[in-house]
Length: 320
Image (cartoon, rainbow, N blue to C red; front, side, top):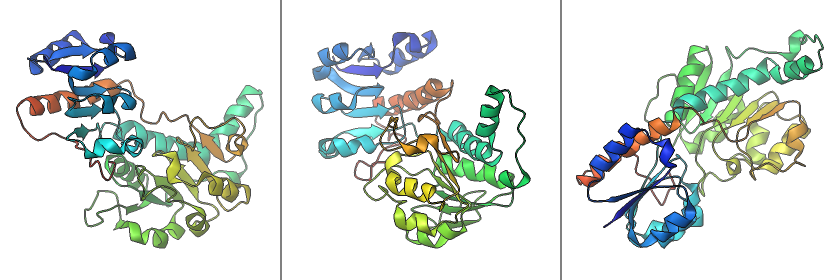
């Protein structure tokens, strides 16, 4: 009997979810575990794998036909190019991150704009410290350039527009309009719009084309007051060039949920920069995460078992 491996703890499932899985996967053995030894024991029987399954195990599953990953980015395929050649469908949970990550982006910008980290330090020291007029600023009226206008970028654009910001989007298909984006351009026009950015927001996946997309040349096109926010992948930014730009005063600040490498080493100068705010790659976390991911998986499972096309299929060549 073929096995459906769901890389979650059994307690992560409600009784209703488990019953629905058993109904949809009739004819499959349902293995719900995050124990790697239990996964390895079933390698030869697994046809469907989903959720938090170590990517290193996937090439060892000879019967694997579909992997439903529990995240959006598929840059892990760069380390497993052999999977791109296999008759294997990979789907992601793209779309479920739009709410928490767009809110995280605005949280980083607002915290830097209103000098919230300084206020937190002052509070811990029991110091009544007011910021000078020129040390805080407003988001309204500023220009946000969003590189990568998918679900996350689109929701960020809507919020930014509602906050009276001007939004320029950069995406592979600029002919597709997005509410809240005043102007959309293609990747070849990135250098043209960078000088306009008060805020540069990166939501792009990591691919060979986007690695170090923002390097020395791009950083020199930005205003000295520009704030860079990266919630995609750390390697889309040349981190050494970013550090130099910040140290030399050529960049106003940065909000980083992702770094290169991760975790960020304790000796990185980024930790001690007053105009840098670092969060530990948790922008997409939310109590609703598993429930939203499960909805996509359940829908795809119904499609898979009935021979219909799946949602959120990853292009294994492009990596997203």
